[in-house]
Structure formats: C-alpha cells, structure tokens
Image 1 (cartoon, rainbow, N blue to C red):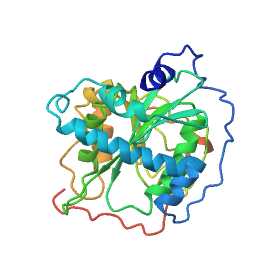
Image 2 (image 1 turned 135 degrees about the vertical axis):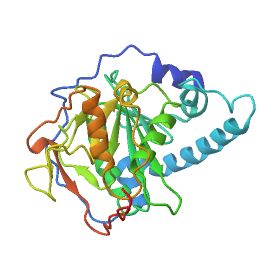
Image 3 (image 1 turned 180 degrees about the horizontal axis):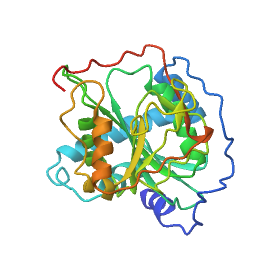
Length: 292
C-alpha cells in the first residue's frame, strides 16, 4: 500500500498545472474574519475528512518522533526523507489534493509549477491563525500549487523577533523538500482575491498593494512587510534576514535595503487583486525596543 501511494503521489504522468487563467477561481471573496476555533477551521478546510485527518496527524507525529530519536534516521539531512519515509505513508486524498500530515498539499490531477513554503512568524495569535488558514488554504488549492505551511513560534518571554523566526522557518523548511520560493506571511493579513497568485514568478515580490487599514495605498513606498516572497537564491544573496530587531517594526525596512543592495528588483502588482483585509480584533502590537 505504501508503494502504491508513493507512485500515485510522485510517479504518475500528468499535465502541468496552469498558472494563469486557472479554472475554479472566484476572484474577490467575502471573507469571514470572525473569531473561530482551530477545530472549526479544520472542519472548514477538510470537510467530512477532518476527523480522519486528526487521526492521521497524530499517527504521523508518533512515527516522526521515533524516526528523529532513532540513531539510524535521526541525523538524515537530505531533503525529501521526511516526505518519503515518514509522511508519505499517511498521504490522504482530499478533494483534488493529496494532503500530507503537517500542512503539506499537492494537486492530484496535474504537476504543480511551483513548490511554495509559507512561513508564518507567530506568537500568541491563536485567535488569528485559524482565521488565516481557513481563508488562505482554499485559495492556494484553487491556484493548483504544491504548498506547505510552517508556523514558526517564538515560545519565550523575550521581545518578538519576527526576522529571526523567518530565518528559522527558512532553514527548517529545507529539511522537507526543495522549495522554489518562500512567502513570509503575517498571521493577521488575509488575501481577498483568489487571483492573488502565490506562485514563485517575479521574485522578490511584495504581495500587498493595499489593505483595509490603509485603503488604496501602501503606508509608504518602500514598504516590504506583511506578505513578501523570495526564492532560495534571493534569501541567500541577502544573507538571510536580520536577527537584531527585537520588538515591533524595522526588520522589513532592513530587508528592503538588503534586497536593493543586492541589486534585486522588487515586483508588486497594483489594484484590488492584491488587496488584503487585516484581522483587527484582539490585535495588540508588540512593544518597540528602546535601543533600536
């Protein structure tokens, strides 16, 4: 059975997934930004398979723990071993996607053009995360991308360090597979349009043209925060992200300068397709460090 699933997932000859004029997209969506539970978000994303998914995830975590502490497998560093040896046997068919426990998705009926890692810097936003995921995952599925979600949590009492979490997420994601690009995604920014394509073309790319907090414009022209995408080569060429910014703000401006200093051209699409709604309730910004 494991071999059969592997071939279905990796070996079957299929057409290339379209990345423009994708069928099934509905354009601008009416978002539900009301507070919800993780269980409700799972039901929204997985539908009648939600209970089965929870069982699969628990089993995959148990298998992964054993693999990581086993001397024979705990030090394996080549990409794809987690997919091939741990997660692949737990692959589930959900609608037109394969789902691998841990937030990894791949279209069944076509070969995706891009492998995308979504990195979400996170701390104490458990009311935001389910809202983002129940809106973001269906959009990415409609875009026929292979994608993985990495929620990178800071679990200490130090000031929040968003950019350091971005470095951690980037390095850890390389242990799973060879992603084409990495999208840094704030947990409270929700895209409103299915056509805001999260594929890896034209990077580095800033995905936000405006939000409902600052209608019809950006806060300032050099803004490179909230949702930004870079390839692996982009990230290496700017020497990753700055680890020195503790507290709120500043790191995205530093990243913008690094990108420009590396002579990379940032792309940003205009218009309502790249508009975002920002989750407002329970929103308290982290304090700004005095020594920045």
